[in-house]
Image (cartoon, rainbow, N blue to C red; front, side, top):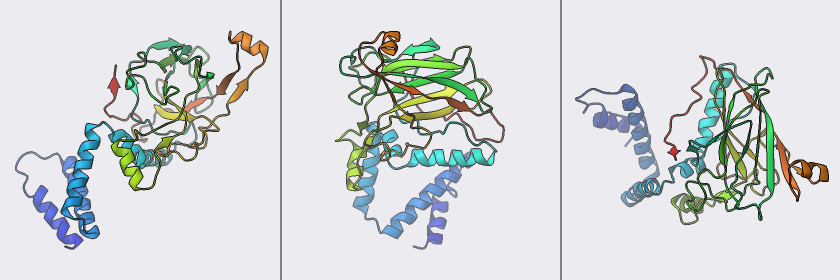
Length: 306
């Protein structure tokens, strides 16, 4: 069939059969996606068994809750960010802290702390390296934003996230920090580890067939927002990680790899009440003011709630 034949066929399947009230946007998107799928089947000469195996794969991916991983691994989530960057630039919003992917492991409702928070529950203190991270939330002109919200979450030393990993305490390595009167935030945690897709999971199965690994570098996720300003979804990556610039989720970006300072002086150890060296990261977040012409910064998607 020609592409024109397929367009006519899909229109007859989806548009001409409509008898009730139609949502024009849903119809438009459905027609386009089904048409593109049919054209791919025709152009690639996909056989019935291949088509059904593809449908089974998607069903299995959904059942195992790996759609978020698959979206990251195929670059879909990064592509969404690229389009958002382009739309913001068109609206005159440039600079600021770069956005990057949210990933599938956020959990709403983390405990709220004022100015400072300790993220870890202490269960990995013997094996882990203490991390202090601090900075200021700023507006686009460099003015501090008191009362801004910094939501932070990251993996433990095994590369696992609390809530999804039931062996961890509730909200381990997750907090919501409200910046102080100078717009500052700080938290104490442990230096996280990177992680990989479940080795027997559906995402890794596809990556194996594509000759790709499913590893992520060590990183820390953030939502940062303040009244009158656009919500920022981002993460910082831990410098020196083997997969820093080889992230299967394509989330590493210039401007999101801060220097990790190793602190060992007795005076600074005493000030933190620590007996062994620790890591320190300074990082400021810069938010854009909300603008009517800019795309929606709040992404509606299903998220876990504890």
